[in-house]
Length: 433
Image: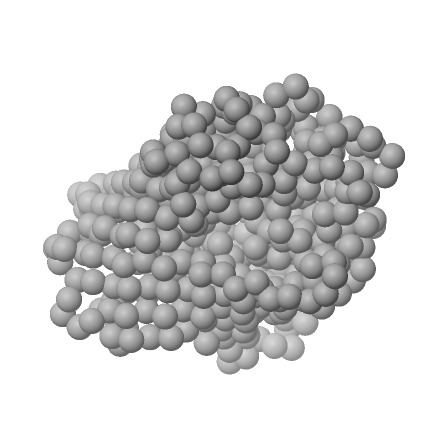
């Protein structure tokens, strides 16, 4: 069984910091939900380069996968949750070793470590931002390199994770229109997609449905209600695929010719020392792993965030349903899924964090956190799988440019899937520039 190193982290704090006021809440980065990863234009030079490097060490139990030796049911990935043994903020898992059995391709990416403890260069990320002075235009590009072991040797996958232009036509209104590849508008977990923005290390069990990077058009609008210390926002998009991660549905091209619509309606209440944010999300359109626009997918979600002093709570629920395919994928399709069964899932997570009242020249912040995830889902004709996870961890922020994190994932197969040892201990050092 993996061991929690959070007590060790806490024991080092007195030597690094002197008591001060509580650390500010881990807020959504940037100025709005529509562009959380970009700083306010008015405070930045016209051209800016930034980024981070995420280096970690991780070890998973067993062979690093959720697959169980001796389970002969096929496709193998329909009877387990292969996303469970995650090791980094990208959701990459330790292993996808199915013992040579057929899998249909509904899988995450993997670092290929198996059950071995290993150092990992999780990602090297570079952001380029151009915001010409006195013009309501911003261009943003995020390029990432992901060195991995592919089973035969080392290779580096290069990813143009985001590339979009944004226009904010009215200086007096919080309105922006974006075109390109950007964060999903569904829910709230996308706000912590990146290692340098995420409080912990690994994404939730439902992140696979909400944290993709679709290509298309997006509109964001927020209006303030100062008399009641509130604001209301709408974030809407029309894209090639929905909000799922790219390993589940391709986003580079629409295979049906019909866009997927998604939106989130949000409410914010800001009081002295307390902040409340609520949202409801929806998504509807064709599955982008098929060529028939009548094969649809739909999602509903609700989310909430509460910040009270040094405490913060994040919670999110999502319900997913996908129609079964009308015919096998055509050659113009993704070319990945031999079978496209109907699918349904729902799940949630609740995360509680506490910002420790420690601050100094070296230590610029420290937090401890815990998260509970629960997911139930399955393909047509197969048992529904109920899985859950407890995640506990801690984070230190040094000199405002280095984050040190340690995290333990306790994965559980509650029903429908065979029990397997797939707990994970993982760490991350994120260097920002």
